[in-house]
Length: 102
Image 1 (tube, one colour):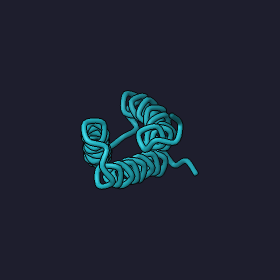
Image 2: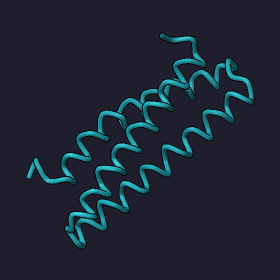
Image 3: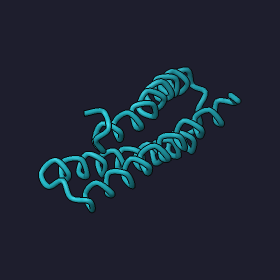
């Protein structure tokens, strides 16, 4: 149903995922246009790595809850979704800052 922790997590994270996807497309065009320094490329790559890791953690939490729907596994989804969303927001903000967008 719509109120289970898996649905809630994916709805929450889905907004961040769409924002990250759009930011990364914009970033790729920015880099291809020769506007980014190597340091900026490395910084965004590192931030994306953090984001990717939090997405992996969330998937693991969801899989654990699906296999064993305990309160602890439910709580792990909430924590993982929060971390994923926060890292996604940080990545989008970083790209916007580098590109000079408000």
